Length: 81
Image (tube, rainbow, N blue to C red):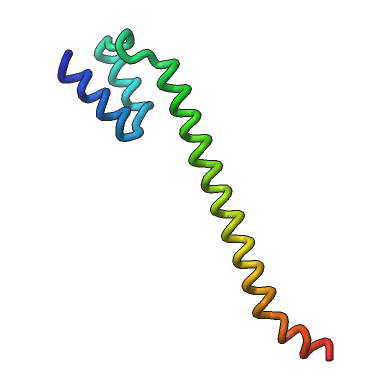
């Protein structure tokens, strides 16, 4: 059982919480690694990662839009004149 608990700990550390819960269930280590707190932390981390991705995308869109608007400004002035 000591080998499996080490495997579960490594899976948790590497971010593979779902696999860790599966291994803990199959090896009867759910008392040592209860699934509810693990799933809650997994969901919290997933939400944080998704939110960070959204923020990066918004920044990228803003920079791209700002770049194109500044690059197209002279052309727009030529077309209007």
